[in-house]
Length: 108
View 1 (cartoon, one colour):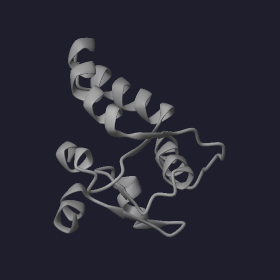
View 2 (cartoon, one colour):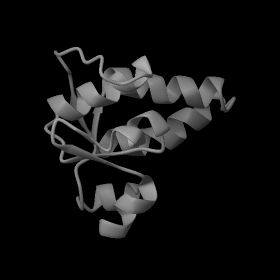
View 3 (cartoon, rainbow, N blue to C red):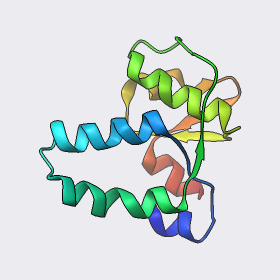
């Protein structure tokens, strides 16, 4: 995925709330030390376009996943790529297709 983003096969869109959530999950749920989180995330943050969503969305059952939807809408994304079942169950949101990683890589 990183290589495709670096090659500009697609534009990776992120927001500050999403960055914080990814880093929180890696440190909390997966118990990664801070230096490993920085090593893993920095290459992604370096190629990503960072947006600052101004709208609040409350359409997903998992409230944290609404930050993904906000980022996608603000960044005018064509798709969302995720492993999260709440988002995958939605399939589409405001014209944005929601793909699993495997499905996205098949078409990328």
